[in-house]
Length: 406
Image (cartoon, rainbow, N blue to C red; front, side, top):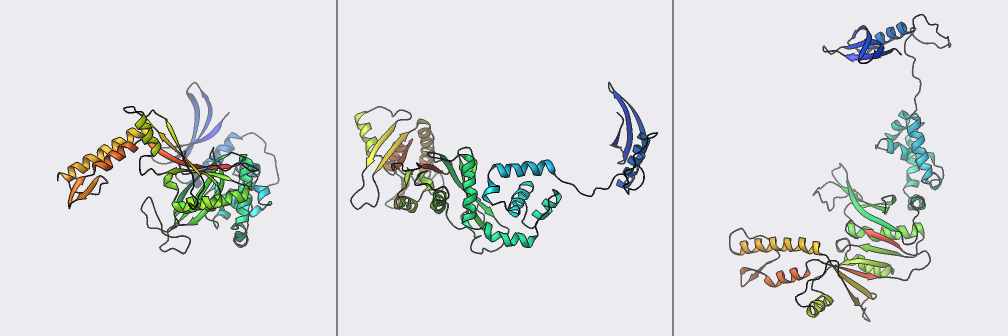
């Protein structure tokens, strides 16, 4: 079937051609001319269409168009397949029901999926998609409703319903930071701790997902709020949104502060929390005394109960210490490197820098061999403290904080 094509020439012009046939690498081509502007290209295309339609009658549709064979004017367009697919996903996730059929909210959400942009510019995205956009004043009137905690809880409940969140489900939590191009903070956007060492105002965003990565809840916090202080508000929000009687918090030692532990204890929640090991645990030392000369096997776990005292302010706990050979290998390599640097610094071969194995003895630096021996004894061990509450109606939900919690 003949068709019209355009080809760039070596001089930079655009050649318009009619291809009548293409068989086994050979083509029958009619060259109509070369154009140097968009208008000339359209004119040559119109000539090509007239030549292809030569001898054929044209049906009069009663349309007021330009020259015969010219392009029809485009009065409207719609991204039908894209919009219908996004709207279908929006309904399947339950957001339409959770939002009460709010078309302004749906348009804002879907527009920002098509193109991440500002609230003001989302109207342009909707118009380009062929969807009538609400006015900016209407959007501003609706924003206070969308900012309420009850609105977010409805959306979180819809996400949980779609993910099938139930008893003994595993959900993951981690935080990130969003930076803003502004000079000064205003109470919410504030400079804070930055792994990239940036000084720009920021906010802290916490994301809760299921085990497969499906988002369940998003929370925003002040930019100068520590990551560990975002944990309890998120846990309380999850319990309120999903009417959970208990959750089991699983977190690594670096993700939980002492204040977090006290809050978890005060709330009576179950937990499995990473525990720092400042000294060789008694149960490990006892095993080594009973098995002199033997190495701890890979994966061996030691269990030690830690009853609460009468005025301890905590519940009975069970401490688990696990040994991993690969973890020990990495730790011992790091200890060897630090001890070697400390020995060179003490000998005056390199400048004296901060090193945990260097101590000042009578005003002179020495290598702390006692600390080195303790660090080698602790290599490969990791501790976790557990408090398990008997499951009540609904059962516990496990919350993991940070990538190293499990």
